[in-house]
Image 1 (cartoon, rainbow, N blue to C red):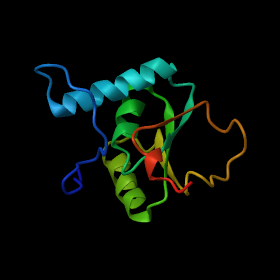
Image 2 (image 1 turned 120 degrees about the horizontal axis):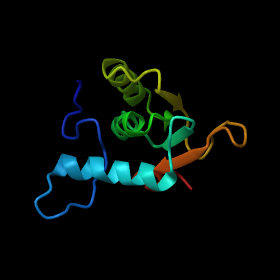
Image 3 (image 1 turned 90 degrees about the horizontal axis):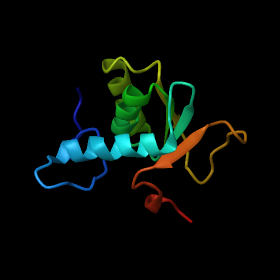
Length: 124
């Protein structure tokens, strides 16, 4: 697995329970998000600000949902696509390069959308 220096494949934090490890808290946070949205194999979901797609892959593995990671950074998308292929999740996970304030998609293109600590980086 390709690792991003200093971050790994996940650029967010999670609330930690006493005795819980950092990576465990991240995964639990992602599972909770997916469960609250009711995501399942029948859904196509948009991950707004996906970075290199770590949470996207974890959530796709957990739910079976197809997930598109929205990112405006070509290098992160390149790395993320490599991660998807190495994890054998490229049939569920892909990327769309765009500024999330200017996405050119028809209405109702996705069943759900989520952002994990990403929208604070947009230009309003």
